[in-house]
Image (tube, rainbow, N blue to C red; front, side, top):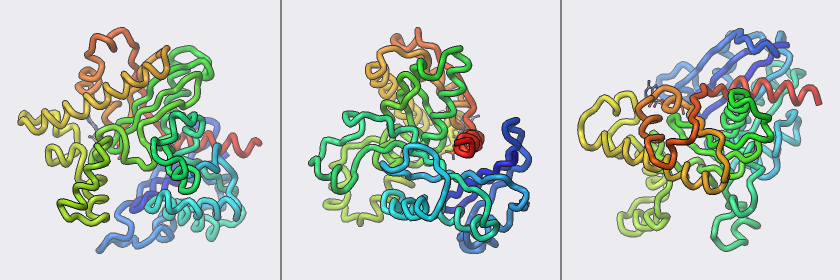
Length: 344
Ligand code: ADP
């Protein structure tokens, strides 16, 4: 069976075509700079049209959809109602859900009869308990405004769980691990008995670990100070926290390969702050989980940086905990999810 996976970002489309269940990759394409000035590709329709693929030959298409809110606890077959619900969730993911929806619509236009499946980044974390997902704000803000922790990178954490359980020779439902997806975006997840029970990203992907360009956890009063005392607009604060902070803000760049090679104080401090934040989350999640079979490193940094892995695990409390390095594969996980939905 041929399953195509489309991951539409705000300005890029990642495409993989799998033969399933063998998981062989038949095609792998990446279109970027969508909609940027001077780019030949001005929208997602053109991006998907530019792919070297004949949708008539494909059995199903899986789409990564960033926000499934509280509604989507699992992957689902897409119909008009699902598309409407993804649209309703746009206020929670204003950059991503419209791009994801665009990808779905383009495939509808090109091949109306192919089953399309939505795989949500948030779905894996819908097992969080209220004590893990409700913020200590007035409770109505959760009830009325749906302000709560959702968590992201769920497809990656779910894939890492499956792979880790195999490596640990444990049943998934008996596996207790801390997964660290350390890419340009980064998140940690505490997985108890095969279910996400806490995660570092929150209402948006801004919370938690120090990332390439995002600050992660900060005192929320800093936002008020920036607006009231530094006269920054809401949009300026948004751009500052999401695009100009993290490693980039601390040392001027966000590629850990380069930062590791540098000898200056700012580069060293950036890595120290990133490592310390990761360790703090591992510590917190050890308390939440009580039993930890392993800490799993993944994402571009987790998979490739021995330096970061050693720095994180070089700690009296962590030295007796097993660590695993697993290359994540969100697209393959989406293809597996599609198979699951088609079998239902
Ligand atoms: P994204 O979140 O964009 O998918 P990736 O998971 O590809 O990101 O991770 C990208 C990051 O991985 C880069 O910013 C870089 O810092 C880091 N990285 C990649 N290779 C290495 C390496 N050999 N050593 C250290 N860091 C690396």
